[in-house]
Image (tube, rainbow, N blue to C red; front, side, top):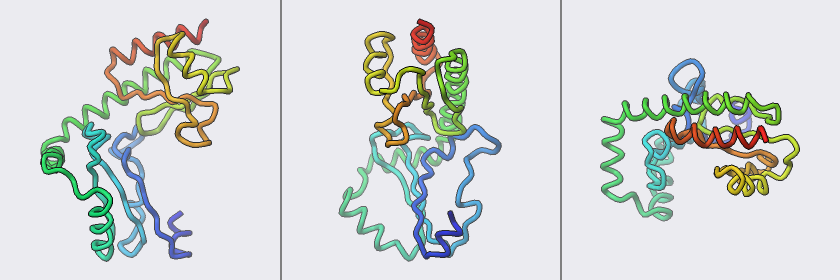
Length: 200
């Protein structure tokens, strides 16, 4: 991808929101930071919403060439008018003192991933891949092509709420999305109900 961008003078916008929620070797997912040079046309975007659980605050950062400074400043001024002062202070505290919280979040998601994998693997009706990162599992249930209708049924029949995969793009059609960034107790209860439903 980087070679193609260099060849054609393209800009890459790189989403690194889930880079710390990675379950492979190392403490983060592979990144363009590992292979890029300062001359490459890359804009990295990140947020506090995942690592530090500040969802909804819309606080994040952009890494880009200093040449884009004025352009980015104007874009932020006219799209958000800046971030409230208390949110800026919370973000500063998160960066300075929040590493333990991030480690806890990642460990909890890793355990959630294990629980989800155990539940889904126990059924011969489910098709899925164990995710290498983030905190969502996408899975399809045999004989259930309409995931949106299935999501509604699972609310009534199993007492669980899952998102239809097509809500995240056409590639998700036929799949359900399950978030495993939850406490072990509540996640285990939901997975128990899902497992029971799959066995029926």
